[in-house]
Structure formats: C-alpha cells, structure tokens
View 1 (cartoon, rainbow, N blue to C red):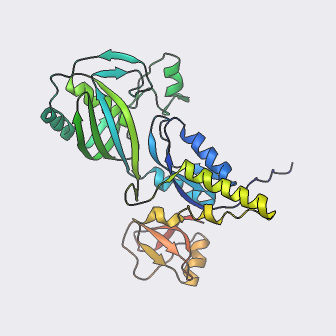
View 2: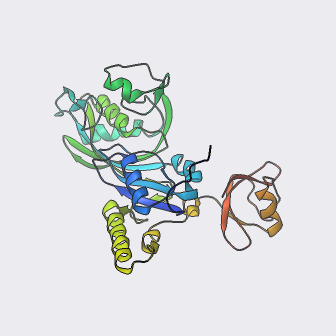
View 3: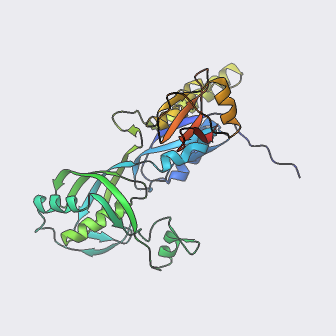
Amino acid sequence: MARRRKQGRNVNGILLLDKPSGISSNHALQRVKRLYKAAKAGHTGSLDPLATGLLPLCLGYTTKFSAFLLDADKRYRVTVRLGVRTSTADAEGEVVETAPTDGVTEAALRDILADFTGSIEQLPPMYSAVKHQGERLYKLAREGKEVERTPRTIQIHALDLLRFDLPDVELDVHCSKGTYVRTLAEDIGARLGCGGHVAALRRTGVGPYVEGQTTFVTMEQVEAAAEAVAAAEAESGQAPDFRAMDAMLLPLDSALDHCPALKLSADAAFYLGQGQPVLVPQSPTEGMVRLYDPSGHFVGVGVILDDGRVQPKRLL
C-alpha cells in the first residue's frame, strides 16, 4: 500500500508564539500550522487554556529538537488569589472552599516563599496530563475520581514577590521542567492557612527565550501576515510568497545558545554524519555542543565523551 505524502510546505524554524488566553496549546499549534501551510509542526510543552505567554512552536525539522526546549527551565508571572480554593487550582475550577485572609502578612508570605525555593517535592494535580495506569489524570478527575499520585522532585530556582495586594499576590517563578504552578499556588495558600488558586498566569520564558530580551509573536501578527500572503497571491496570480512570514521564525540553533559551538572539518562532519564519534580540536571537556559544518551551517548537537571525542546526539 502506498504511503500517503504529507501535505504542506517544507518550512523550518521556531516561532515564539505569545499564546492568547482561552485556547489550548494544541489549538494554537494547529492554527499556526495551517497559516504557515507547514507539513510538520509541534509545540514544546503545553500551557493551560487560561494561561498566556510563550509557547515555542517548532516547524519542520526543528520538531526533532523540541525535547531540548521541553526539558528547559521555565519562567512564569502568576497572580495567586488567596482565600479561595478551587477544584482545578485555577480560576476555571469550581470554588470548593473559602477562608479569610485578614491574618496574612507580607512578611509571613516572604518567609513561606523562601521555604518553597530550591529542591522541593510536588504532587501532580489531578487536573494534569500525567498518566495513571494509561489514563490521563484530567480524564479521571472529570469523572469525579481521585487516585494516588507520586510526588516529584522539582527545582524552584527563584520565587520573587512582585505585588502584595490581598486577596491577590503576584509572583515571579523561575523553575525546572515539570513544575505545576497551580500546585505551587495551592500549596502556598495552604501554608498560609487560607488556601489559594491561580487567578492569572503568563509564561515569560522558556530556556534562552525570555520576555523583554526576545520578541514574542502574537496570533494576530501571524494571521495578518498570512492574510497579506493570500492577498498578494490573489492579486498577482503567482505562487504565494511566504518570506515575510518565515522571517518571524528563529533558526533552530537559537534554542541551543547555552551549548558551546564547534566548527567541524569536512572529514569530521562526514564521520559524525555516519554516527561515528570524532576528535575535534579545542572541544570542551564535557557537556553538549552545537555542531557546524565547514560552511558554517548548523548540522546538529553532539555530546563530549569521557575520552574527549564528540559523539553525535541529534543531527539534521
């Protein structure tokens, strides 16, 4: 039986989408994929529909490297509403408990934030994509079921108080992958004795991409650019020109700025391409490296072995 050919064009790069509130990450991904007419696309870690902010989308061959952003540290700006606990730990859930916040002080909150900084144990919420015996927890939660979950060790690198205006407090969170900000908000509220939930959430950073240092692209900007492409095509009667849209994409190696760069000789590039480790002069002594061919084109990622050779890890 013949294999069906993929529809869409071969476009490669990373779009730093500023996801709007009210839509799922997959909805945003599919919308962008259609607008770009891309043959292949994927995201690098979902955001709740309530949340806004950075959702890096990988188009084309960059999807092969999406795990590097999936595993990267994240940054969030979250508004925690104290005194109200909900079924989902965010504003989309039903209120299950309320408590006064009169006794909550800024000093007490700062002390508690210090306790939540560093390596901590966190229990995944029932409304999450974690699987239990093959079923997503959120599906079980919608059926009214609650099951035992295993705590996970996460890292909270920084947890700063931005605003104290009861019943709301605003926090800046810099954390490892796998952190549930909803659970963090609920746990902080529990320690304060009044409960709490996420009233608003914005992801401000993923790996090397941080709001204020990198430009995020809104869905409206992508839609407007796609409309301009369609209008120009209709007027000229020629093939669509996607150059303006593609200019919104970042190159794949921008996601790997934390890795040292190595320029390969022609021989080294050949043998690495065959999956063989090679010696490269002036290589680091450990860790991952970005690999470039003699012409300066990015060709993939390698890892330094104990004997100093470079082992290919993921190649284009």
